[in-house]
Amino acid sequence: MKNIILVTHAEFAKGIITSARLILGTTENIKYVSISEKETINDVAEAIGKIVRTFPEKSPVIIITDIAGGSTTRSAVQLMSKRENTYVLTGLNLGMLLEILCADISEGTDKETLREILRDTVKNSREAIQLANDLSGETEKKPDEDLGEL
Amino acid sequence: MIKLLRIDDRLIHGQVAVSWTSFLGADTIVVANDNAINDKVMQMAFNMAKPPQATLSIKSLKGAAAVINNPKYEERTIFVVTASTEDALYLADNCKSIANICLGGIRQAPGKKRIERQVYLNDADIQAVRKIHELGRNVYLQAVPTEKKLSFEEIMKEYDK
Image 1 (cartoon, rainbow over the protein chains, first blue to last red):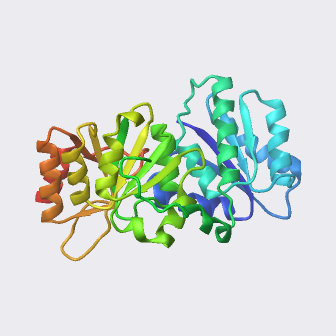
Image 2 (image 1 turned 90 degrees about the horizontal axis):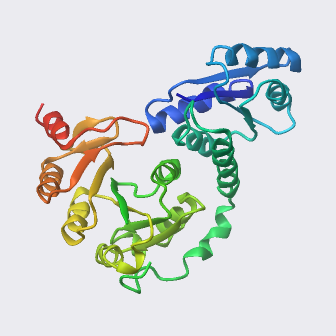
Image 3 (image 1 turned 120 degrees about the vertical axis):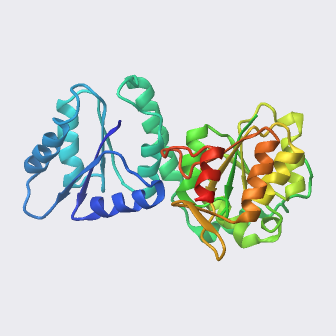
């Protein structure tokens, strides 16, 4: 079981969970915090903390926020600084979320391995953002001209 | 090594490809499809959908079989994708190294019966699946890596319901 919390402005988190569910069927245990204009950073950090406390003590917690530098991220980072084995990824998108959901992570995953997995996720998510117009040249090589060659 | 052959009528699409590739730890994706080799738009879409860390190769069925049987690529961890049970049977028949075949996404169409949320089969599909099973391969249904598998027997049982 992975401990995942999405922290977003308004209903983004709730919506993206339905997207992940459409693709994966189930979405195990994703929690979320939706913030409005009323909450302070401390309020949001407290809301995240409340969810974190329902998870087993010392188990890894992955928080994904919608925008780097936003109050969603600042609240998450505040929590990260207080709790060990807590990780914050910024720039939530569907590819990133699916990769985290499918990653080989469990309660017992050691910290260095987990960090490596999350680093890869960030790298892959970044590379998956593309301008489609620029991709058309990539298939210049006629597929299949060399039978038996990749 | 051939990690898995997956049947999906959309071949490679969006994040399903990402989740399977990372789940399998595949470094190479082979799309085996006779239409895709001549369709530039499809090729572009596959290039976009593939995870950045993987090599993508788009081949005809015959070409894919030749790649799979090429000893040069034994060191690679290869994920093969076909669009139909028929194409999967062709590859299973021509490539001994394909041990695992997974029914992933076959959409609803007239005459197809629902087996699972994302998989609909007709008599011809069932026949192909049975032949793959008779070739001694492990054929099962699993739409996404986080969902539970349906065995060959469970697929047959579901179809006969």
